[in-house]
Length: 99
Length: 145
Image 1 (tube, chains in turn cyan, blue):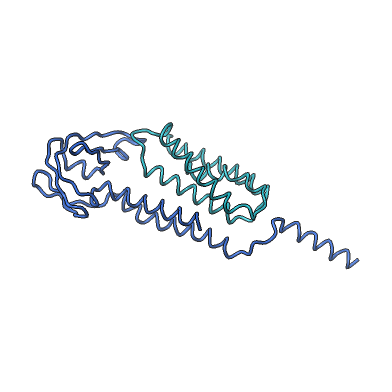
Image 2 (tube, rainbow over the protein chains, first blue to last red):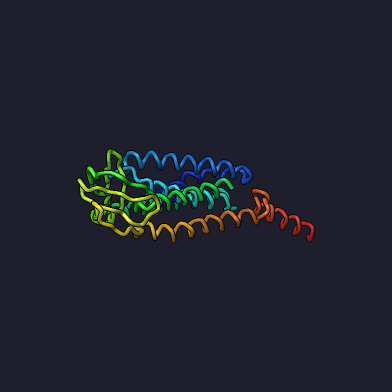
């Protein structure tokens, strides 16, 4: 959930750019999100060990978020909604993981 | 296409990683030196079992961890489902995580495929679709007038 939500929030600024720019920017943004996920998994979320399955799951969440942003025809308002939704999903992820 | 390829690689790696914890793909031959159990978010449910065999550390599932104790002689062939512990055979199977992954990963790939396919099917129209329609409506209404 954290990978999915955080990537949605990270990619939401792309909604202000022309849609034709999106494909490679979405891919690059998704890769950046995956790299950030690796970093957080190695540091603040490393509980017992670095768990490749946790990392791969959150990376797949990032790819799903990328696929959603890539196919979405919305503009700036949709981008704002995507940003807020992304943050809400991250918050929900934290709640379910640590509550 | 790049996102789809990335999804396939990640899903495949996820399935392989959970399968690897059953030790089924691995070839083992040595003496278990240590079995370290570490706790994650839910102790007793998502514990991490680290089995050291002749200096190599293997992240194994609970079934394997339950069959081996430090000092045991461990042997198995790659892709064999039988683990020999001090000569005694133990049948290996997939953990609940691994089985779940084999069901969930194809579904995730299906979702990614549907999302990307819906994009490919749409022609790349203008960025301001709704604005254009409004302009067209305005034109029509002005010509009507």
